[in-house]
Amino acid sequence: MSAPADLVLTANGPGEISGWLFPVLGALREQLGGDSGGRRDVRVVVWTPPCNFASGREREALERMGGWDLLLGPREMWQFVLRGRLPDRYRPARRGMVVFLGGDLFYAAVVARRLGYAAVAYTEGRARWFWAYERFFVPDESARRRAVGMGASPRRVEVAGDLVVDAIEQRRRSLPEAETGAAARLERPLTVGLFAGSRDFEVRWVLPLLLRAAGMVRERLAGRELRVVAVRSPYASGRAVEEALADAGPQAAARVEWVTDEDWTGMRRTQAMLECDVAITVPGTVTAELGVLGVPTVTILPLQRPDLIPLEGVPGLVGSLPLVGRGIKAAIVRRGARRVGPLSVPSRRAGRVLSPQLVGTVTPENVAAEVAALLQDAPRRRRLGEELRRAMGPPGAAVRMAAYVLGRLGAGAGVGP
Picture 1 (cartoon, rainbow, N blue to C red):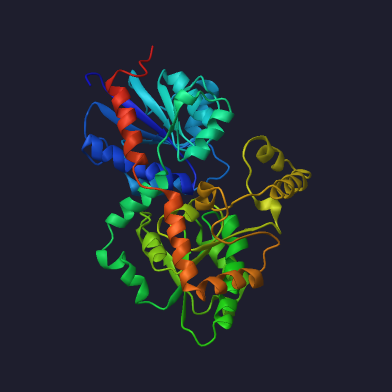
Picture 2 (picture 1 turned 135 degrees about the vertical axis):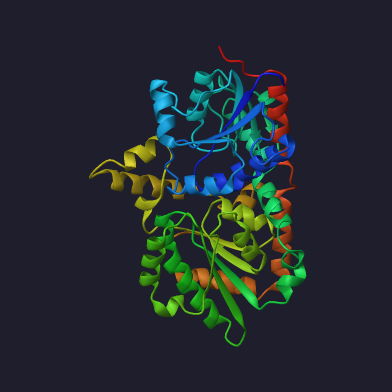
């Protein structure tokens, strides 16, 4: 490569940053030979787009994560997309590529067009704005069929594997060997992990339910030692956790160990997952992470407060309207719940429900029943763990994507005006 080039990576939201962006940055560092770019002819720019699913703490996470040369935010993207105004601190190279790793495909498409760069995307099968993307990377064959069904050319859709597998493998390689082996789990008492989500609304609503369910599991397993670990996402505010604990009450929160990724690396969360015999969580990237590690999971989608659930696109905008928005949004969520299929990522990969899931009016009692049944059936847990790992597939997606975009830059892709 002779002339300098930019790699602009877009991502926002806890799951996209920890599950998609993190492993791609790691693969880029390895292939470029440095902590942030290594080579002077490639600059790595991370640009977070506006996102209804963001927690508000993504910038802090990215600053701690590193691996990039320049970090730009949602407001700067709004200005560029709507007015064509570049951030004062960003002077783009004449050559470059945009890599969509989350957010809305529209923003990355417009950024690529305005910069004069080629673009690629990693999605769960969503494909739009075909004029902007020369390739859609997807995790599996089901996602490839979905992308083609949405209008993408089959030649432009490539099955790369699941990036979350790479994210977990990168973290697991950094853990002490004693904490990653099967023997480590066998030496501990039966352990239940509580994962209430990364956003404040999830924590306030879901954490009290999980704590009460854990207490009921103890009652069902009377006489057996049970360890309960609550994993708090660093994206969730302390205030949200305090409010959830006040709602749950001191009895429900008693005898619970707390784990927090204070350093934003995901290492402590991964270590806690490795210790779990069963986990309880909400839909999202955490179900994929647990699946990679073979942890049986009870996935819940409580719909007692449908107005709290964030939605993409027009439904999300309608839901924010004053007076009538909440009611309309609740109706949209309830209608969509009738068509809910597999909730967890491994179940979606397998095309059928693997781990138990509960949707609708979810109570501590029915959650506890599912968890206790798994804890009392070790052979079932082993079989389920194998099915989950198999469904998530092998690592390698991040390396493939990094090699592709760096190869295209080397071929002179996306020369601007």
